[in-house]
Length: 443
Ligand code: 2M8
Image (cartoon, rainbow, N blue to C red; front, side, top):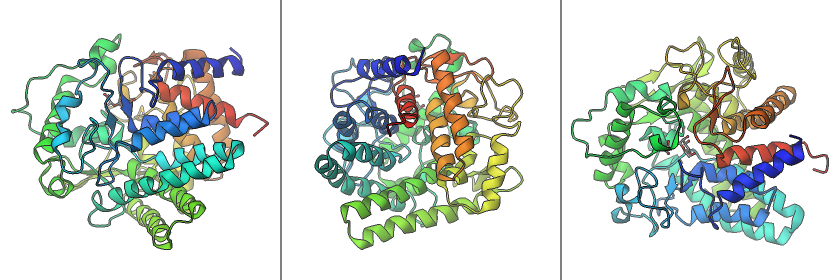
């Protein structure tokens, strides 16, 4: 398939998943709007229909909570009730203080939205400057409120590291990053529930286990009982981890949002706040740097210890950007070492979500080993920001080849390249479109 046909196929995936004001993350497995999926989808849609791309972000932010939190799922009220578990009724968010009047989950996901907004604005201003200005001016205050939420209620001590209450907030749900903390969560009193995800995959070993789901549900029940009150969750909730990857994306997004703030003429104190959150985040990540592994580690606040596993989340310094040269060199070396892209027998030198050298590695199971195209995009974008253009370009080409040869799957087995999880996953199509547009000599 040539690039033009591949782009057409990607557009078709997004068209088929389009529900008018938002794009469902996948045709059956994920029939609602997911927060960070929508951000990536907007970046891809920017190359297809920039106004539709803007709407993707605007519809998500219409569901923003009064605290500033952007919910991780905005439920489609027209989807069948049993389409996804846990559905809208499980969260009981309408009764929570500050929740919007549309059904959402009570969690959030990594803050990549400013990066997406910049992409949409950048594409839009080539087409219609006044429209682009109105778009970014309208979204900026909501983006700022979202960042302020993360910098304050999710980092009450100002450590620079953002606390998550649930593996779903990390977006890397069953990563071994969360194993020890989940083991410590007791599940003797959870209500009966029925999973839906297993009916949408061909092989259930590609999804999290029953034990993991029990704990996911226990954590939802706990937050629900706390009324999704961040101040209470910060001391009473049984799962509290400072997430290095999310914090790194927050550093990068704060820098992008500071540029947006400049563009829209935002007050100086907001620009200063964004810059200080970025700087504080870098300091926080530096404290979590584990030089022996060459990775940054998450910190479990409940157990009061760092989480020592080898996963792609450890590339947090590279993703945050602007780190000391010695840290950047160590990360680049590690990326191509046998721990990640240099592992023997990989179909493409793309980073497995968990290092094949980690005892928890499982090549077909979700976040425990498979390669994820949207994560490849994050690494590509980060390498370019770090000035590593040659390595970035190799990653972009390999990322495109993976999709060209194996399709728009959610994730891929690293050694065989076998497509896994959902097919026609929206963000896979979206990042492909952004990668192909990058190669367009007209741009
Ligand atoms: C996956 O997470 C959801 C829960 O949020 C699930 O497994 O049901 C993750 O890969 C997450 O990062 C992603 O946003 C979501 C939709 O693609 O699916």
